[in-house]
Length: 74
Image (cartoon, rainbow, N blue to C red):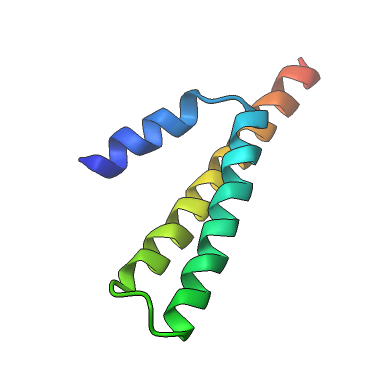
């Protein structure tokens, strides 16, 4: 159930906050990849989780853009 609550939480945020969170997640992913390459990262599944979070943010941003486009066309 953690994914659904996180997803609902992301959907309530505005576009600027989502872009900021996207940048932070991308920086975290880079750090995780470096740590994995140097053998410092114990749980490699963290990389997958961060990639999924980034994908969810991009999806929500696309949905918000489509909603704005529909509102403009009315």
